[in-house]
Length: 501
Picture 1 (cartoon, helix red, strand yellow):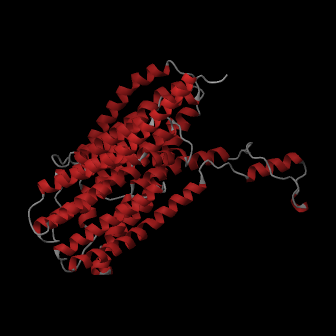
Picture 2 (picture 1 turned 135 degrees about the vertical axis):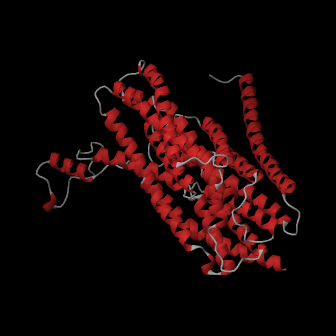
């Protein structure tokens, strides 16, 4: 049926409204970024101590704002990707939860790793002049931000911690030589980069294996879920309580290890007890099917993702404001020997708000990449990934070790995917495999067509993890440190030339 004139006119109006909305969003983004950068400059201007080096703090605040945007755009995808990929959270809901929790973690619990990044990576024999130290930090800072921005543009989930550490090392070598770097600290950090994805993958695989053994493989899955889902919720609650006691309130309270363990046990029991009636009520209305059992993990998954975002904000705020904190201290004292770096609240605020803004504006593409393109997610698998990554990140952050949350979260995703793949292919012919040809070499022929099909099915394993993405991610991880270091060294030489001029 031909459209009426009215239909055509209304269609034109609808197209115009859509175009206007798209244009409004495009115009709103630079406006919001401008407001954020002006706010960062204003904060730095209000709190900086007057002196000959004070204007470097203003420059550093702008770079810190830029860096925080990139941390939010790239790293936070690792936290919310599994929840979005499993359809437990919409993209909009994930952005709101992550922005709030990231900011809260940065402001309430950020700090220990900041000192590692800003103070412990370089150990010159003779104290650097304050200006040289500031130029090193500025170069490292800007190089890391530029590299992460480039990686985000190409949808590569690189490690912001890698980028910052590589930048500091490259600028330090350009400024004072190879031996200025505190290599024992670098060695410990590199070891953590190797260990953390493996540990995250093992914990995630162990959690998923436990769920499969204790719930999904049972004849009465509903009854098994009533018994074990509250235990998983209690574990999450206990870990979060231990983290807050050990690190989150460290500025006002320093409990003993025994107290931390006791709090973890108490909150495990609280989480277990409070979730039991909720799970029991939900279990009354579900069928004995895997899809229905997975729905019981949706709400715990949301809390686990929020916990992981809080931990990420606490741990990776160092990547956004660590060098800025060091520059502030050097500018105020006029020396690079700043001891323990002070952490002004306004510095953490820039990092927290920048992470949230970067996530909202630039994070959705990487969230989809991490949550949907590596391996298939449902609420159970995503919960195991989030909880495993949270446990690993919280332990590392409590120790003050700048591990890569990217490595941990992606390692957990791979752990879940490879476990599923191993279980899928274990001793059972894969019916999805269709041999491309039964006309093999004469000495390799099977006795019957059925034998040929069975042999082909056993040889061909079903792949549940996309190798292409695995190879790309590992390549990005390997390239990040030397790329950031090289760029930082070049930037330092350029900045020092202008400073001398």
